[in-house]
Amino acid sequence: QVQLVESGGGLVQPGGSLRLACAASGSIFSINVMAWYRQAPGKQRELVAGMSSGGVTNYADSVKGRFTISRNNAKNTVYLQMNTLKPEDTAVYYCNFHVRPSAVAGWVNYWGQGTQVTVSS
Image 1 (cartoon, rainbow, N blue to C red):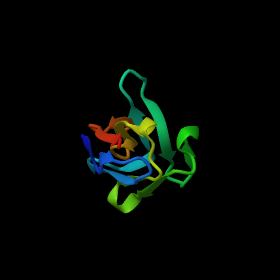
Image 2 (cartoon, one colour):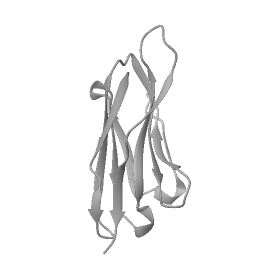
Image 3 (cartoon, helix red, strand yellow):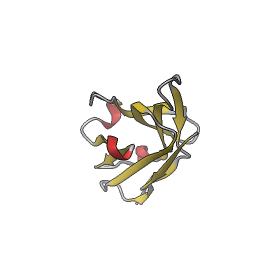
Image 4 (cartoon, one colour):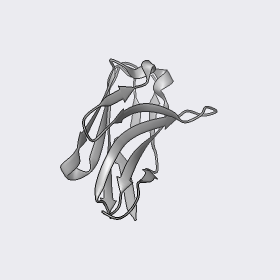
């Protein structure tokens, strides 16, 4: 089994910054894509940013230039630096890892438990 534990959410004023982290533990042979999603009340979960094991990144148009995804493969951890936050960034943020638990296993998708980010004055 693989567990993902998120940290770093909270309340911040518009224009402020937050840094989210998500660390994986358990049976891990390799991790391909690490990504962040978010879900606001009444809306569908959407991709915020993703990063492949090769370092290729993609971002939602709404966060380009403000958010930066990074990863530490030695620590099985992904980060999301969020700058110039807006009220519309308010949501529960979830990390998502594409994991191969062992050399003979297939790829499995895992989710974190979610962390609340609230942008409000």
